[in-house]
Length: 193
Image (cartoon, rainbow, N blue to C red; front, side, top):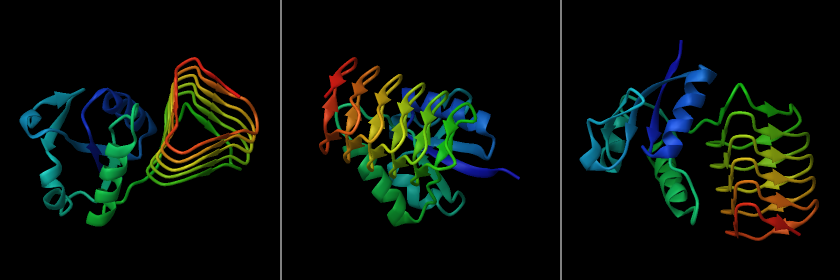
């Protein structure tokens, strides 16, 4: 039997996450949380059933939630939502697309989403509340700290450490065995040495 899950955020990342959740098959999307003025709207057939103010009330019926807000300039919104969900008591599972490859020797934190066709290699550590986006590559021995977004087609080479809250842009490449500082913003297409 599938478990009900609540999606927090109704933008573009929500649409991609819906697709992954439907394909993964462990959860039934019970509804979406977004701005109050959007209540009643539907996103890919799923209704926006409330806003942030309704989370405590909704928790009476739905115990699982995942953050469906993307991250570009700052991780602050995702961090704030994650902390709020923890305080209320929501379970925040990791969601891994069945089209992704995650090594059995990798460690994945809670509330992390691994999207379609991502590859997470052996001895990799990925923290909590991260987005590992479509077709990204996290190579062996890399470490991705909490609250990071590794964008579409990005490559984090072996032994690289990506510190907390970093945005790593589409098609950016990190040289092996470097450290990228906290809350860094790596532009799309960059080569990080």
